[in-house]
Amino acid sequence: MLKRIPEPLKALVEQLARLPGLGPKSAMRVAMSLLKWPEAETRRLGRGIHDLHDNLHLCSRCGGLSATDPCPLCTDTQRTRDTICLVTEWDSMLALDEGGFYHGQYMILGGLLAPLEHINADCLDMDRLMRRLAEGEVRELILALGATIEAENTASYVRRMVHEAFPHVHISRLAQGIPLGAEVKYMDKETLRQSLQYRQTL
Image 1 (tube, rainbow, N blue to C red):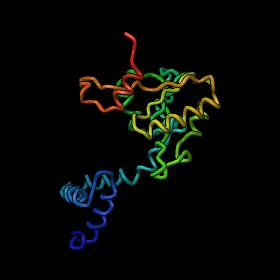
Image 2 (image 1 turned 180 degrees about the vertical axis):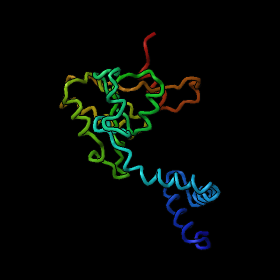
Image 3 (image 1 turned 120 degrees about the vertical axis):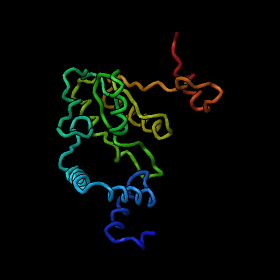
Image 4 (image 1 turned 90 degrees about the vertical axis):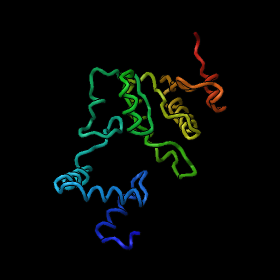
């Protein structure tokens, strides 16, 4: 298909197809939609993409994306400084913070241990976490890494590293188990195991 289209359009489709969730056909639909936009709009989109690296920074405190360094979450004086919630990626931090029920600090780990995908401990942002813990303010580290095998392995690694260096820091994790509205008979074995293991006293 790409052989029959003009070179500028072909180049754009090939670039768009590299985005997550977009294959060649989806990328072609996006490109064709962009061609229907007013020229001013496509130019504004192009400028936005072009300026992305100049206008966005990684927060030196939490590793999140921000227009400033440190980011607004890290400089918010209303947030408690003795708790850090460790998440895998920036969008996980956004999802947690949108709820408005957590008022501590965050830290982005930058991934999960996945040896088959060549993601090892060197790929994780442990140095930033250890520097934050070394400041001495943090009393609790909450692991919010998910419920996959990779998340479990990563949590074990983080727990071991933190306990060795900062034994006074309490390490907790998000409760895991049966989601609200679900029935026991439809749950997989691992979900049921976690539900029993992390059961709550009534």
